[in-house]
Image (tube, helix red, strand yellow):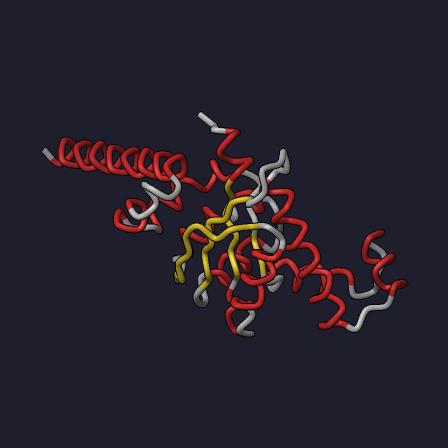
Length: 202
């Protein structure tokens, strides 16, 4: 059951392998904090292909999905759980994606030295390098922000250890509770699978 209130206040912000390779993580974290976003938990992680596929399940229908999974599993990413600092009605995902989109635009301009005319053609889908640029930017675009925190909560419960989650109990009790429930559900699911396997072998 989706907790829409939780998803409007917290989100996942992933600095992808290309951001780590370029040592952009301290710059981006500083920018996020200046924009009123607080990092409540962070962890450097190397995803398995299976975990990367779960993280990007919303992109499964795209033809670059397998390349994206391979890229995300190729090196470490920095996982940040963030919340919006200000006491306003602003949506955390919208605020996080504002920064993500700004960073992606500048990456496009830097990588391809794109003019305003190029940007218009890309927006219309008529640029002569459309396929190359679109695929490259889909893979190497520094940042990932999921549309809904609830959709990746089971993955986060797997990636963050019990100690990681317990550390949030006093600081971020609502987030702690959601991650704890997701972790318990994973444990129950594994117990059921183990019991079923043992029963089949018996």
